[in-house]
Length: 173
Figure 1 (tube, rainbow, N blue to C red):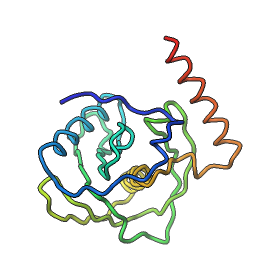
Figure 2: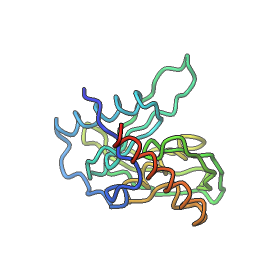
Figure 3: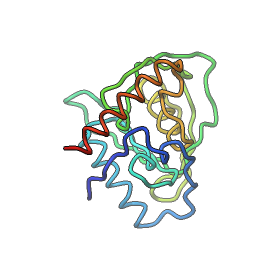
Figure 4: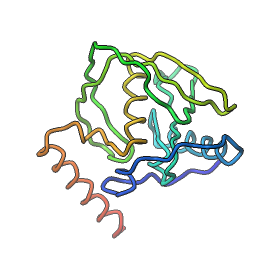
C-alpha cells in the first residue's frame, strides 16, 4: 500500500466529473487499498479518487470514529444515490482537500446508494447519520462538487483564499 498525495483546493481536477469504472481489477483494488491507507493516515472518514488525482468513480469511507470501535472500511465503485429522504439534516463538514475548514451543510438525512463492490457485484444499502452525510459528500467529489459549493459566495471565497495561501506556504517550504 502507498500513501497518496491529497489534492488541495483550488485544483481544477477537484471540479471535474470522474469517469465510471469499466472493470474491477487488481489495479483498482490497489487504488482502493492506497485510498484507505491515505484516508486513515490523514486522518479522515472519506476519500474520493479525484482527491488523489485519479479521475475514476471510486470512493472509500469509514465512519466508525470511536477509539474502541472496529474499523468498517467501505469501497464504493460507481456509486449512485437511488433514493433520498425528504427529511434533511445539517452536519458540520470538513474535507481532506480543504484542510482545517468546516461549515454546516444541509443534505438529505437518509440516502439509499447502489454501487459495485471490489468483487464486481452490485450492492445497495441505506445510510443515515454521519454515514449518509459522508457518502453524499464523497459522491459530490465524483461529480466535481465540493462542500464549499453549498456555502454563500462570500464564505466560499474566504475559504478559497485561505487554501490559496496554504498552497503558497507549502510551495515555499
